[in-house]
Amino acid sequence: MAALEARHLSDLRFPEVSRALRALSSAYVERRHALSRGAALDGRGKRAAFAMFYGPLHFLTVAHVVRALDAHPPAGGPIVDIGCGTGVCSAAWALEQPVPPRLVGFDTNDYAVQEARWTWTQLGLTGSARKGDATALPPPTQRRALVAGWVLNELSEETRAWTWASLQRSAEAGDAVLIVEPISRTVSPWWDDVASATIRLGGRADEWRFPADLPPLVAKLDHAAGLSHRELTARTCYIPPK
Image 1: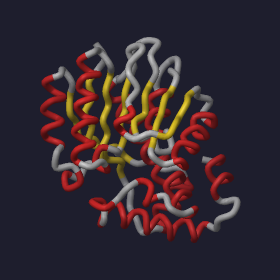
Image 2 (image 1 turned 180 degrees about the vertical axis):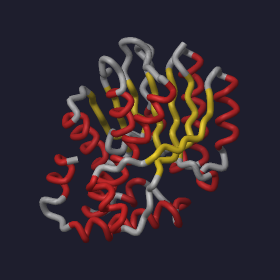
Image 3 (image 1 turned 90 degrees about the vertical axis):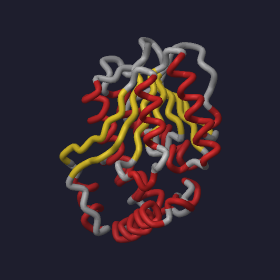
Image 4 (image 1 turned 120 degrees about the vertical axis):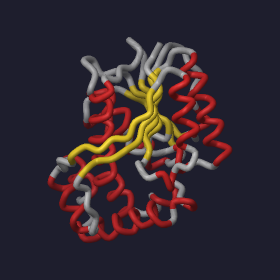
């Protein structure tokens, strides 16, 4: 968090970031049907808000989920972060392991790719990120873990169907698969179909609510933007490795 603050508040004032967070939050809640990560991160303020606020929230949520699921990647395999954003989902999963695995990420946004690399370096993790959309899932060279955190709801129906079909094939081949989405059903009307298929593949679908113990900077942004994260929430589909 100290590194994030130094990185993003070196040339921005806190009120600028909190205003950007309000705009970003409004876009996610009210205009999600028209949202793309590229549009969401079209200014320095929004990028700072995304990295300093949503990044830590997602990191903490995935850490809680992985711990509760006792989720482990296949031995020796990487964690592949689909639509990696700032890289926090794969980082949280990796840091819950006795020996953190290598990370691989891709995202359509150039800034997100650079930020993911920075995040992993700050956390002492080894990984590589590149530009690519959700259809850029690399072919397996070994068993691996795949995480799609808060990304499937942002895809077009066609791309989401293709991505989910690819994830199912990976699970059938023995990969671990973790999908994390907002708990609200309004942003994921397709969820029940994915959850049912997950269970047929030997996985589980869950809803989570964890007490929110927010870092001071995140709590300050939460209050300044008029938000209220008293708990961390998510819904997940998880298929363990075979």
